Structures are given as structure tokens and as C-alpha cells.
Image (cartoon, rainbow, N blue to C red):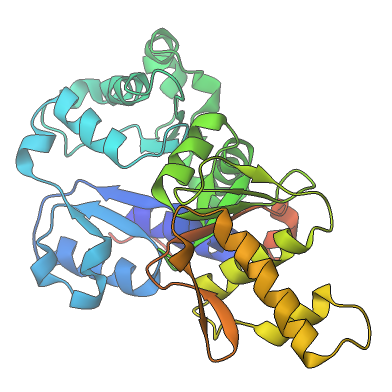
Amino acid sequence: MYHTAELLQAMARICPDLLAWTTVCAIDDPGPDTTAAIAGWLGEYTAVQIAARVDPRELPPEHSGRVIPIAMPQLAEPSALAKMLASLLLPGGVLLQDVHLSTLHFIPADRWWESIYLAATVRGIFPKHQPAVRFISNKRGYTATFGRDLMDAGFDPREVMDKAELESAVVPSIASDVDVRFPLELTSSARPHAVPVAAHDDSRHEIEKSLDLVEWDVSGRVELGGRLLAGPVAFRTGSHEALTWQRLIDDRITSGPGVPVADVGQRLAEAGAERAEISNLAARHIHALRARLSSSSAIVTANRAYALDPAVTVGRIRRRPPAHLRQPPVSPVRKADPPA
């Protein structure tokens, strides 16, 4: 628990955007100390999800939605634990594992490095988009004791990272993995934080299957997909329709007041157009947008503004900025001494 707390602190200092994409899996025995630690993490890192051996009813109710209880049978044997860990990962995600998992009773204490096979099992559960697996350890000379086992399991012993190098090696390595594997991010009306998105077709299909409208702006042109469309639509650069969809989706994500009718009409009208002409142009324009949808009632008009119905779920996909543009410079912070 102490090393996990250190890792979260390091992430918060040098790569805070990763916290919203992180699930901590704490397999320590239940008890007051474990519950207190979990409650502290939930309070301090308001976007982190935590899987642990705790009763959510013992935690502040405002955090219970971010807690995944671990049942004892899930820790009883390797395949059950591997399935549970896989359920916490996105396809192609990143698994960071401590090599010495002393709380796992099915691993002999004198062969602690056999936990690496647990990670190999998790990786094998994803035949198409396998996660990256990274190990951390504070053991010295591990290459002599289980380097061959690592290679047999398909891992490079030179890539085991030292727990003492959280800020200089561990967190930057994980951030780099995420940047490569998830170059896009999804902002949606369904959740408060942006979530990582892979750039392959399977990921796109899953997103468009789960949302009514999705705006993609990742390739130099705007594309629209989602359940309300018969098929994806690509717009030419500078398209008025693309801009209106973008404004409607942004308004829905932010729970805004709608897109004013006058703003839409003035964008379409010639300079000096009368108010009636502006309104008519806006109405015809929105009629064309409604015609693309399987339900024309998805776009509503109220208070002289157009808006997507609150029941419509929407998303927006963008490329993530490079890490050096997301992370402010950080001054070195001295680590606290570990408890006795």
C-alpha cells in the first residue's frame, strides 16, 4: 500500500492526466488500515478507480461509484485473478505489476517471481489487442534469480523498473506507453473525464456502437458517426454542416443553453440579410441535419436555439497533445522515508 501511494503521488506530480485513466488494484487483506488508505486515495485522486478488498458501504458514498470490490474467490487461484485483472483493462491497455505479490497465497513465498506468469495470463486473454505489461521491483539482482523465467514468459528482464525511480523512469514509461497505444481521447456527455481511445477500427466501432452521435476530428476533416446515423458521414473542410454538428455536440457535452437560431442563420446568410431570411436559412439548414438522423426529434428547438435532446448521448474524439505540452515542469520533491 505504501508503494502504491508513492506511485499515485508521483503520477499526480508529473503526469496528472493519467490519473483519470488509472485503475489501482490493491489486493491487501481487508481491515481498518486498508479501508482508510483506500478512502484517502479516493479523496485525494478524484478520478482514479480502485479495485480492492473493501466494502463500498464503509467508504464515503460520493466515492462508491469508483470502487470495485474484490471477492476472496478472485484471489484463490491464478486464472480467477487474471480474469479479474483483465476486466479492469482496456484492450491494448497497460498493466503495471509489482513482481513480489506477497498477498497471493497460491504463489510460494520462496518463488515470489512466479507472479510474472499471472501477467502473462492476463496478456493472453486479449488475443487481438494485447496489453503492454511492465514490472516494478525493489529487489536487487533479480536478473540472476528469475531473468530466465521472465524471458520464458515473454518479458525482457532488462525492462523491470526500480520502485525507487518512480518519477525518473516508471511514470514516464507508463505515460509513453499510453501515448503510443491511445493517441486519441474521447470527451462525452456520459462521463466527466476524457478517456483514452486507440486508433484502430475496433475501437471506433465500439465507440460508435455505444453513443448516439460521435464527432471525429483527427484526420484533417470532420466525420460524424454513431447509432443515430445509417452510416458515417465525412464533411469537406469548412463545411457549414460540420460546424453546426460540432457546436450542437459541444453544447450537449457542456449542458449548454443551445445554439442560437440567429447564429446559425447569420453564418449561412449574405451580409445585410433580413431577420426573416436568416431564420428561414437556419430552419432549412437544421431540417437537412435532422434528415440524416434516424430520429428527427433528436434535435429540438427551444428558446430560439437549437439543441440535441438531453436523452441523446454524444462524444467528441480529438488527438491528444504531446506529453511535453500536457505536463508542467516539476521541481524535484524529496520522498518521505518509508515507515519502520
